[in-house]
Image (cartoon, rainbow, N blue to C red):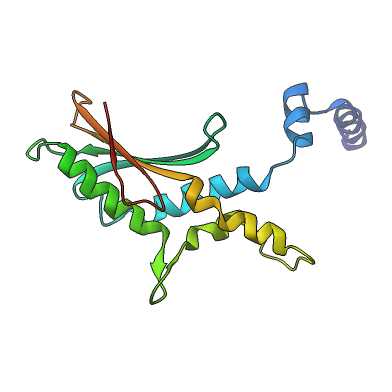
Length: 170
């Protein structure tokens, strides 16, 4: 009886195969951009414990093909409606959010989030790639969307990561 079960299980396993959808996903490689976006979202989500007192927080990172920009969006929903959302609050939260991406080494900003878009292992002859990656901060837009509890009202603002200018989005 046991031998019969093993023979049946063997023949059933010969017919097992992934569907077309899973075959497509298995054969479609992950790019450094895809993986970098994933790692950046994970690091942002892991870095929000101090803000959860005031807000519910959600992060989205995506590439805007039309504008050739990396968009890093933090959506904040007020837990209590005692605090009014305003453009001033949006600007304050955006300035705080942008500080997650760099530190000063004394005189220049070091954008440490770029490690998410690099290979970590040994690579021969990748100086040109390194220089290209160093241009990412000037093509990165950080954005804050503030909602009241219940999503009744919102205020949005954005800024290029390397700029101090903040635009209010209507």
